[in-house]
Every structure is written in structure tokens, then in C-alpha cells.
Amino acid sequence: MSLLLLGKLKDVAKIRCRELRKRQTPAERAVWHMLRNRRHHGLKFNRQHPLFHDLEGRETFYIADFYCHELHLVIELDGAAHADRTEEDRNRDRILYHLGMKVLRYPNDIAIFSPHRILADIDERKHQLFDNNTEK
Image 1 (cartoon, rainbow, N blue to C red):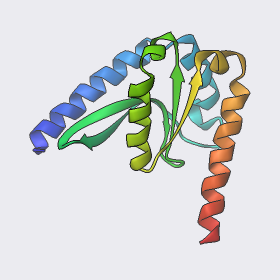
Image 2: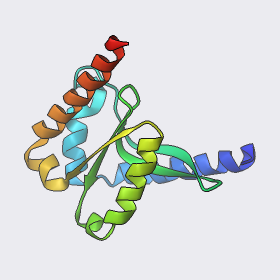
Image 3: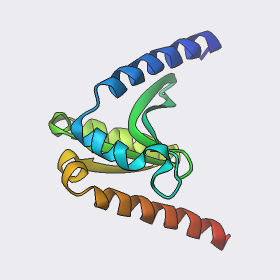
């Protein structure tokens, strides 16, 4: 892909991410409150973060609800709209996995009523990652 096209793709992604940040759901707001400003173990999370990849010879991107580069971790919150997109979500998760990322998916109810479960899973991912690095 040419640098000109890649630059345009990044511009499109930036605009789309800004739009999504302005219209966050109650579930996203609850999780963001726990993760923003390195509140959870000093980990840096970004919300509505674009992840670029090559799909069958063309550059494209996904927007992760939350992304932690240090842990290569994507957190997705699934509302009612995702009920019809399970296969699409599975394919997306496969691609992100091949890019070296771990995807954690939660229904909005968990994010709102049991957010501690999300934090516990982040902790588990952190321990897995750092335990594997110290064994080498």
C-alpha cells in the first residue's frame, strides 16, 4: 500500500475513533473509569484505539474498545448489536490473535454490574505475560 493511501486510512481511523469516544456507552464509561490514567496497576489503556492490519492484500483497521500495548490486550464490550455479529467477531478475534494480541470479550452487563471480573482477567493476563518472560 502506498504511503498516501496509508495516510488517508489513518485519517479515516482517527476521525472514526473520535466519533466513538464522544458517544461512549454506559458500559464503556464504567470500564474507562477503572482504566483511565493508569489507574489499574499503572497500565496504559487507550479507548477506541485503531489496530491496523493487512487483510488479503489490503490495509484495513479494527477499532478496539480498549487496548493495552504493554499487554497486547484488547478488551471488547458487546452490547445487543453484537448478537447478530458473532461470526464477524470471531474472525476479528482470530486476526487479532495472529497479530499477537489477546482479546477479552464481555457483555455490557458484566462491565456495568461486575467490573471487578474484567480487572481480575487483566491481572491474569499481566501475570501470564510476565511469568512467560521471566522463564526465558
